[in-house]
Length: 161
Length: 192
Ligand SMILES: [Zn+2]
Image 1 (tube, chains in turn blue, cyan):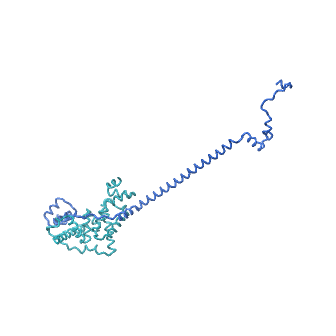
Image 2 (tube, rainbow over the protein chains, first blue to last red):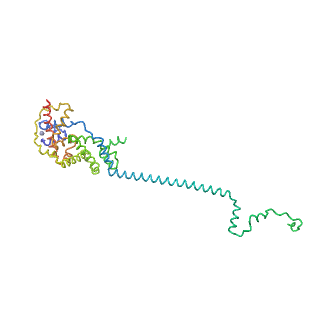
């Protein structure tokens, strides 16, 4: 092994037997190996970026196009949910109001029908439509008794029935 | 709970999750490397706090934009350092900084004979501080290779970052170590 090969192995921290043999025999490579061994782990206390710098970098990551796309998607979904909720509320309100209104109407009609004299109204209506029962007024009608007349005993025809 | 789960994921898994629009995956990835990259940049460009902050931020913004192009067979740290390196080079080019080219003018470091290195016995925090001062004096390319190796980045990746051959990267590393050994010996001598 020559010094060039040895240098590569020393500095790449390859510790095979052949390099050990070379180091034992070569003062230059031994010095290099000793120097690197003494210095490689000699590091100061690591410096730290400020929180402001951290913030700027994380914000930049947050604005990454992929994340932006997702944000936009989230905004669209949120907007859809808001609109859908608003539309549902409006629909429900309309249905409720309509039901109340209809019920009120029904109640109104119900009381109307309750107060009405159906039979009388029918004849009034019929008379108004002139269906040829004009003479059958309630007054005329009242004369027609549903009960059978008393038989006239002086009349022999009546007696025969 | 979710963060604990994220901590267990590999870099590649976190990147995939982020590309599927999970911000928390990016947060975990960032948390994993923020200190390491920031520290590395501070040591690479000592005393230039505003520039370090700027390059650190720009690096991550590029990372966010280019994650879809990340190839999973490479080391993530090496990849982000490469981005930082390119940004720093752009900056120095723009400001016509000479520092990036001083590597070429600094080839006069000799191979020393093995000698007694008393600095190795010094308290590690004191030695670490001295080393930081010595690293500042290294030519930029040597400093970069040395710091990258300290971050456990392989020579293949270093060659890619520095846009040079593996052999050149190895040479720079060798010079860096010799240079630091020499400077630390002098520092120790001055210290008495
Ligand atoms: Zn040798």
